[in-house]
Length: 85
Image (cartoon, rainbow, N blue to C red; front, side):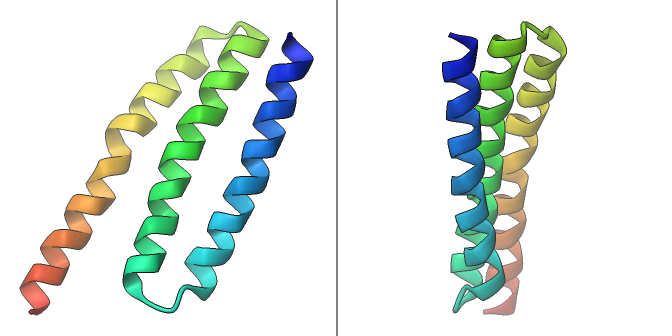
């Protein structure tokens, strides 16, 4: 089971790589924002998979903090774009 969870974490890292390409090459700021939101979502998923696979509760705490901080980028982006309009 641990091998399966680790393989899933590696596959999610590949998804994260594609998100990084979108952040770098994104045609607009919205595409870059969605790429950065992908970092938060996939980062939490990877941390949860690794926490279960390695039986480390500290990774669960890190995943919780990342899940709470990830929406702040969206809020900041919306506030900045509304002030520019």
